[in-house]
Length: 386
Ligand code: MG
Image (tube, rainbow, N blue to C red; front, top):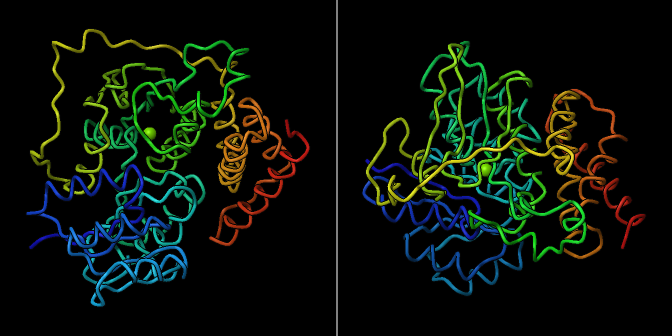
C-alpha cells in the first residue's frame, strides 16, 4: 500500500524538492493533495503530472484561474478551512508543510490533532506555537518529523542516546551572505547582496534570514520546542562548508554529527520514509573532494540574532511569536528598501522590548501576539524609514 501524501506549499523551494522526492519514490508514495498560495500554473502542472485531484489555493481569484487550467474532475478550493479539510482527510498519512511564514500554523495543528505525520519545514509553526504543538503531540498519536536540515540532522543524531543523555545540541550555520563582510559594509548591504547565499539555494525570505542569522535565531527556538532541551543546552557554530548539518553532544562527551550534500531532499526523504531509510537517488558525499571542515564561533556583536533568540526563549510564552512576526515585517521592509539591514535587528529588538510575554495557552493568544507585533514593527518602520 502506498502512503498518501499532502504537500502544502508545493510551489516553493522546499515544495519543489518534495515533488522531486515523491517522483523518485513513486512506488512508495502517492500525492493526494497539493496546496499553493497563488502559483496556479505550476500547481496545475503538478496536479496533472502526479494525478492529484485535490487542490487548494489562497483565494477565490486564484481558485478561478486554477479551475480554468484544469479539467472538471479536479477539485479546486481556497482558504484555510479547505487546507484543514485536506490534511485531516481520513486516508492521508503524511502532511508535508512547506508554507512560508505563518500560514502553516492552522493546518499543522489540525493534522496533528487528526494523528497524522507532519513533515515540517515551516519553522514558524514551532516558533509561534511550539507549546501548543507539544501539548497536542503528548495527548495523541500525531508526530512531527523535522525537515529543516539542522533539525533533521539533530533528529537523526538523537538516535545515538536517550533524552537524559543529551548534553548539548549544536546547530551549524553557514554564516550567510555576509560571513566575510565587515559591520560597516554590512550596514550598507542591499537585499540583492543578502540574496547571494554561499551554499544553499532557498526562497528569498529564508535567504535574507540566513544573511542576518535570524534564520538561526528561529532555528534555536524551533530546536528548543522540538527537542525539549534547556536553553543553555543549545549552541551555534559557524561551519562554512555546510556539510555537517548539526550535531548532538552526549553526557560522556561523544558527539554525533550528520553529514550529507547540502541538498534539502535528504531531510525531506528521511521525514517521509522514517523510521526506514531508502536508497533514493541523492548524490553521495565524496570524501576525496571535501578537503577540510572548518568551524568558527559566531560573532555575537556583528550578529545580534543569537542574543535575540535566547532573550525570546528566556521570556518564553508569546515572545518567540513576537520575534518571528517582527522579523517578517522587517525583512519585507528591507526588501522594499525602506530600512537598512541592521535595522532588521533593531526592529525585532524594539518590538520585543515593548511586548509583555504571556503564557501560550491557545492559538488565539499566539495569533494576537503575532498581530500586535506586526503593528509595532510597522510603526518602527514608519519612524525609521530611510
Ligand atoms: Mg535550516
